[in-house]
Image (cartoon, rainbow, N blue to C red):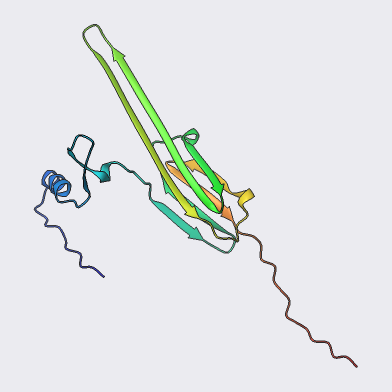
Length: 151
């Protein structure tokens, strides 16, 4: 168990960002020898995993993406979810020209239990949430052993 120290209320956003950047133990050197923060490199969406008697459900918060951006695969009992989105905009006028681009991607994987029907996994993306339904195999209820007396 670790002690959580609450932040002071007087701390403002700007000093907090600067403090978090320079006080982070994940500072690295890039190829030029300059410092950068590795927290900015990877964006992994939060996931909710829900289990009931019939299925597992995985919900990933991935706003701003489209259905075509996702790639969902199952290989060797590992569910892999990835997404890539690249955007570019250009504006040209008589006196200026702008070009902006962005690239976002993530990758998550989950080890699957043996009791799943992988052929019937369903995935839907709606309102920024990717929801996967992973149905469980039906477990046959074994009847209790009945001993028959031999006469």
